[in-house]
Image 1 (cartoon, rainbow, N blue to C red):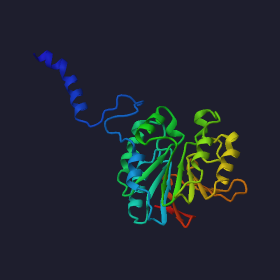
Image 2 (image 1 turned 90 degrees about the horizontal axis):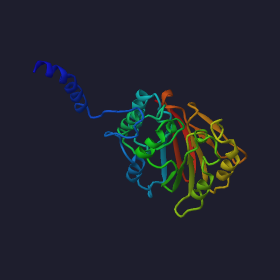
Image 3 (image 1 turned 180 degrees about the vertical axis):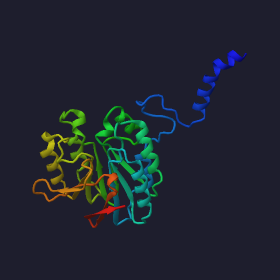
Length: 269
């Protein structure tokens, strides 16, 4: 009996360790587990609504939460201390290695936000099985929503992750989504990799910027990726392309739209 007990004791300890936890990751390449959130973007957009009676659209743009869990917690506290925000956009690079555990950490931290948030996929989120994790946890890579009469066109611009195959960003999809639409007075594009990056497909640059320039009511193109604030104006359209600083720099962009006029400010926390 004693010999038998000594033989099964390690097995019993292992079983207790597994059943005593609410989460057991069998592989770093997992795409989903029991504590993973699902369809975050769709759920939060339903919660946000259309903002039909909101004549002042005010939202926060942040990004690059990779390796910045503590700063993300501080970011949440800073946003929750305000009472003038409609929603938050997490503009990519949620993770560093496209690993489920990283995205779980960040998504769980952001559940503490008092306002809804949506996420856009970043280039680091497309490594390993990150694209699959993002699709399950957040939703489609290209999607749109309308709030306060402004159409937000969120899309994948991580060209390098597709070996610059000429299909990312999807220009045809963008053109279709930027057509005039009843109830829409202005348009904002949001993607992770900006048009001035070496990670953006240079063969698509002119089509990309001209598509925005030719859209009536196009207000701005918003990005992350560079980890530091930047503002630039491609071509002669006068359209601002704005890059938000990384969360690790304790900074975000506060964007405001009133009467189809966009203003923004850098906010430190």
